[in-house]
Image (tube, rainbow, N blue to C red):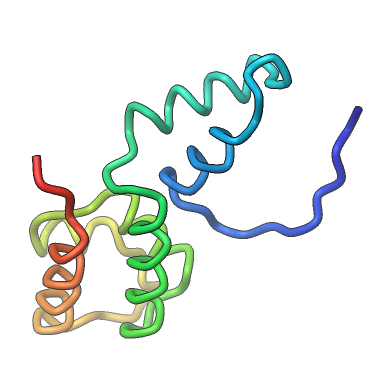
Length: 112
């Protein structure tokens, strides 16, 4: 039975994995199983941390939610990685802003 889309929202890989993790395996289609497998391989932090970090980045810096989601998905470790992750549409973030952003990201980074 087709499902109705109620809302569209940018979602981190971790959050997508958490959502798919609630679906019974016998109710999943092949595509959903593949996406779940992808989320399990590439999730860098827990879904709860991902949600909090996305919100913190979005509220503390002048970036769009979709950019914050992309940063959380990549969890950059350097200013260069962070710059290449952000697509600020002509808006340039200062080195100080990027350093502050990395400090916030580091607070949420899961230790290996």
